Image (cartoon, rainbow, N blue to C red; front, side):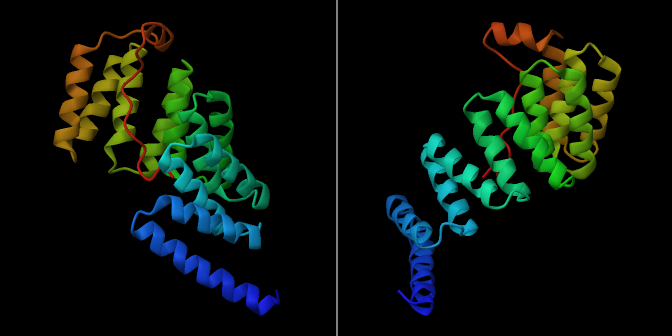
Length: 214
Protein backbone atom coordinates (compact mmCIF):
# COMPACT_ATOMS: atom_id res chain seq x y z
CA UNK A 1 0.00 0.00 0.00
CA UNK A 2 1.39 3.39 -1.00
CA UNK A 3 1.67 6.22 1.49
CA UNK A 4 -1.22 8.07 -0.17
CA UNK A 5 -3.41 4.99 -0.19
CA UNK A 6 -2.59 4.37 3.47
CA UNK A 7 -3.54 7.95 4.34
CA UNK A 8 -6.84 7.70 2.46
CA UNK A 9 -7.61 4.42 4.21
CA UNK A 10 -6.90 5.96 7.61
CA UNK A 11 -9.17 8.92 6.90
CA UNK A 12 -11.95 6.59 5.75
CA UNK A 13 -11.59 4.36 8.81
CA UNK A 14 -11.53 7.35 11.15
CA UNK A 15 -14.80 8.62 9.66
CA UNK A 16 -16.36 5.17 10.02
CA UNK A 17 -15.16 4.95 13.63
CA UNK A 18 -16.63 8.36 14.49
CA UNK A 19 -19.97 7.30 13.00
CA UNK A 20 -19.95 4.01 14.92
CA UNK A 21 -19.26 5.84 18.18
CA UNK A 22 -21.94 8.42 17.42
CA UNK A 23 -24.55 5.71 16.91
CA UNK A 24 -23.29 3.73 19.91
CA UNK A 25 -22.15 0.73 17.88
CA UNK A 26 -19.30 0.03 20.27
CA UNK A 27 -18.12 -3.39 18.98
CA UNK A 28 -17.98 -1.99 15.45
CA UNK A 29 -16.06 1.08 16.62
CA UNK A 30 -13.58 -1.09 18.52
CA UNK A 31 -12.93 -3.16 15.40
CA UNK A 32 -12.38 -0.08 13.26
CA UNK A 33 -9.97 1.50 15.73
CA UNK A 34 -8.05 -1.77 15.83
CA UNK A 35 -7.70 -1.55 12.06
CA UNK A 36 -6.46 2.02 12.38
CA UNK A 37 -3.86 1.02 14.94
CA UNK A 38 -2.75 -1.89 12.77
CA UNK A 39 -2.11 0.61 9.97
CA UNK A 40 -0.48 3.18 12.26
CA UNK A 41 0.64 1.79 15.65
CA UNK A 42 1.71 5.27 16.79
CA UNK A 43 -1.70 6.84 16.17
CA UNK A 44 -2.24 8.38 19.61
CA UNK A 45 -5.76 9.60 18.82
CA UNK A 46 -6.90 6.12 17.80
CA UNK A 47 -5.31 4.51 20.86
CA UNK A 48 -6.95 7.01 23.20
CA UNK A 49 -10.33 6.47 21.55
CA UNK A 50 -9.95 2.69 21.75
CA UNK A 51 -8.91 2.90 25.39
CA UNK A 52 -11.98 5.01 26.14
CA UNK A 53 -14.26 2.50 24.44
CA UNK A 54 -12.76 -0.38 26.41
CA UNK A 55 -13.18 1.57 29.64
CA UNK A 56 -16.80 2.44 28.86
CA UNK A 57 -17.57 -1.21 28.11
CA UNK A 58 -15.97 -2.35 31.39
CA UNK A 59 -12.88 -4.03 29.94
CA UNK A 60 -10.42 -2.27 32.23
CA UNK A 61 -7.52 -4.60 31.43
CA UNK A 62 -7.73 -3.81 27.72
CA UNK A 63 -8.18 -0.10 28.48
CA UNK A 64 -5.08 -0.06 30.67
CA UNK A 65 -3.11 -1.78 27.91
CA UNK A 66 -4.06 0.89 25.38
CA UNK A 67 -3.19 3.79 27.65
CA UNK A 68 0.08 2.14 28.70
CA UNK A 69 1.02 1.93 25.04
CA UNK A 70 -0.12 5.51 24.57
CA UNK A 71 2.16 6.88 27.30
CA UNK A 72 4.98 4.79 25.86
CA UNK A 73 4.40 6.53 22.51
CA UNK A 74 4.04 9.98 24.09
CA UNK A 75 5.42 10.05 27.65
CA UNK A 76 4.45 13.71 28.03
CA UNK A 77 0.72 13.17 27.40
CA UNK A 78 -0.69 14.32 30.75
CA UNK A 79 -4.27 13.39 29.88
CA UNK A 80 -3.20 9.85 29.05
CA UNK A 81 -1.42 9.56 32.41
CA UNK A 82 -4.57 10.82 34.11
CA UNK A 83 -6.75 8.27 32.32
CA UNK A 84 -4.30 5.52 33.20
CA UNK A 85 -4.39 6.59 36.84
CA UNK A 86 -8.18 6.59 36.82
CA UNK A 87 -8.23 3.06 35.40
CA UNK A 88 -5.71 1.76 37.95
CA UNK A 89 -7.84 3.35 40.67
CA UNK A 90 -10.88 1.50 39.34
CA UNK A 91 -8.88 -1.72 39.54
CA UNK A 92 -7.95 -0.94 43.18
CA UNK A 93 -4.26 -0.67 42.31
CA UNK A 94 -3.66 2.41 44.44
CA UNK A 95 0.10 2.43 44.04
CA UNK A 96 -0.08 2.47 40.25
CA UNK A 97 -2.91 5.02 40.34
CA UNK A 98 -0.89 7.36 42.54
CA UNK A 99 2.17 7.12 40.29
CA UNK A 100 0.10 7.95 37.22
CA UNK A 101 -1.76 10.85 38.82
CA UNK A 102 1.52 12.29 40.10
CA UNK A 103 3.02 11.99 36.63
CA UNK A 104 -0.02 13.78 35.19
CA UNK A 105 0.29 16.76 37.55
CA UNK A 106 4.06 16.85 37.06
CA UNK A 107 3.51 17.23 33.31
CA UNK A 108 0.48 19.51 33.64
CA UNK A 109 0.27 21.21 37.05
CA UNK A 110 -3.04 22.83 36.06
CA UNK A 111 -4.79 19.51 35.38
CA UNK A 112 -7.30 19.86 38.20
CA UNK A 113 -8.98 16.47 37.77
CA UNK A 114 -5.62 14.73 38.23
CA UNK A 115 -5.17 16.50 41.57
CA UNK A 116 -8.67 15.38 42.51
CA UNK A 117 -7.97 11.77 41.56
CA UNK A 118 -4.70 11.84 43.49
CA UNK A 119 -6.53 13.16 46.53
CA UNK A 120 -9.03 10.29 46.44
CA UNK A 121 -6.21 7.76 46.20
CA UNK A 122 -4.46 9.32 49.20
CA UNK A 123 -7.70 9.18 51.20
CA UNK A 124 -8.11 5.49 50.44
CA UNK A 125 -4.54 4.94 51.55
CA UNK A 126 -5.21 6.70 54.85
CA UNK A 127 -2.81 9.56 54.05
CA UNK A 128 -5.14 12.37 55.05
CA UNK A 129 -2.55 15.07 55.72
CA UNK A 130 -1.23 14.65 52.18
CA UNK A 131 -4.76 14.59 50.79
CA UNK A 132 -5.51 17.98 52.34
CA UNK A 133 -2.67 19.62 50.41
CA UNK A 134 -3.79 17.95 47.20
CA UNK A 135 -7.46 18.96 47.52
CA UNK A 136 -6.39 22.50 48.42
CA UNK A 137 -4.53 22.58 45.11
CA UNK A 138 -7.57 21.16 43.32
CA UNK A 139 -9.96 23.85 44.56
CA UNK A 140 -7.44 26.57 43.79
CA UNK A 141 -7.47 25.38 40.19
CA UNK A 142 -11.23 24.74 40.15
CA UNK A 143 -12.69 27.27 42.60
CA UNK A 144 -16.31 26.76 41.55
CA UNK A 145 -16.42 22.96 41.46
CA UNK A 146 -17.98 21.53 44.63
CA UNK A 147 -16.27 18.13 44.59
CA UNK A 148 -12.88 19.22 45.86
CA UNK A 149 -14.51 21.31 48.60
CA UNK A 150 -16.53 18.32 49.77
CA UNK A 151 -13.49 16.07 49.96
CA UNK A 152 -11.38 18.74 51.65
CA UNK A 153 -14.07 19.42 54.25
CA UNK A 154 -14.59 15.74 55.03
CA UNK A 155 -10.85 15.10 55.19
CA UNK A 156 -10.43 17.87 57.76
CA UNK A 157 -13.40 16.39 59.62
CA UNK A 158 -11.89 12.91 59.75
CA UNK A 159 -8.67 14.39 61.10
CA UNK A 160 -10.65 16.00 63.89
CA UNK A 161 -10.00 19.49 62.54
CA UNK A 162 -13.56 20.71 62.90
CA UNK A 163 -12.86 24.43 62.58
CA UNK A 164 -11.19 24.02 59.19
CA UNK A 165 -13.93 21.64 58.03
CA UNK A 166 -16.66 24.18 58.76
CA UNK A 167 -14.67 26.95 57.08
CA UNK A 168 -14.64 24.84 53.93
CA UNK A 169 -18.40 24.38 54.29
CA UNK A 170 -18.87 28.15 54.51
CA UNK A 171 -16.80 28.68 51.38
CA UNK A 172 -18.83 26.07 49.51
CA UNK A 173 -22.15 27.52 50.70
CA UNK A 174 -21.30 30.85 49.09
CA UNK A 175 -21.70 29.46 45.58
CA UNK A 176 -23.22 25.96 45.84
CA UNK A 177 -26.07 25.86 48.40
CA UNK A 178 -27.38 22.43 47.38
CA UNK A 179 -24.04 20.64 47.51
CA UNK A 180 -23.02 22.47 50.66
CA UNK A 181 -26.13 21.05 52.33
CA UNK A 182 -24.77 17.56 51.65
CA UNK A 183 -21.44 18.50 53.21
CA UNK A 184 -23.20 20.04 56.22
CA UNK A 185 -25.27 16.90 56.75
CA UNK A 186 -22.23 14.63 56.54
CA UNK A 187 -20.19 16.83 58.87
CA UNK A 188 -23.00 16.67 61.41
CA UNK A 189 -23.83 12.97 61.07
CA UNK A 190 -20.41 11.37 60.51
CA UNK A 191 -18.19 10.79 63.52
CA UNK A 192 -14.52 11.62 62.88
CA UNK A 193 -12.44 8.48 62.57
CA UNK A 194 -9.41 7.19 60.73
CA UNK A 195 -9.84 6.09 57.13
CA UNK A 196 -8.04 2.84 57.89
CA UNK A 197 -10.76 1.96 60.37
CA UNK A 198 -13.46 2.91 57.88
CA UNK A 199 -11.96 0.64 55.26
CA UNK A 200 -11.95 -2.26 57.70
CA UNK A 201 -15.65 -1.67 58.20
CA UNK A 202 -16.30 -1.65 54.47
CA UNK A 203 -16.68 2.10 54.11
CA UNK A 204 -14.54 5.02 53.04
CA UNK A 205 -15.03 8.74 52.82
CA UNK A 206 -17.87 9.49 50.44
CA UNK A 207 -16.65 9.62 46.86
CA UNK A 208 -17.92 11.78 44.04
CA UNK A 209 -17.48 10.62 40.47
CA UNK A 210 -14.64 12.30 38.61
CA UNK A 211 -16.01 14.37 35.79
CA UNK A 212 -14.63 13.51 32.33
CA UNK A 213 -12.78 10.54 33.72
CA UNK A 214 -11.71 9.12 30.42
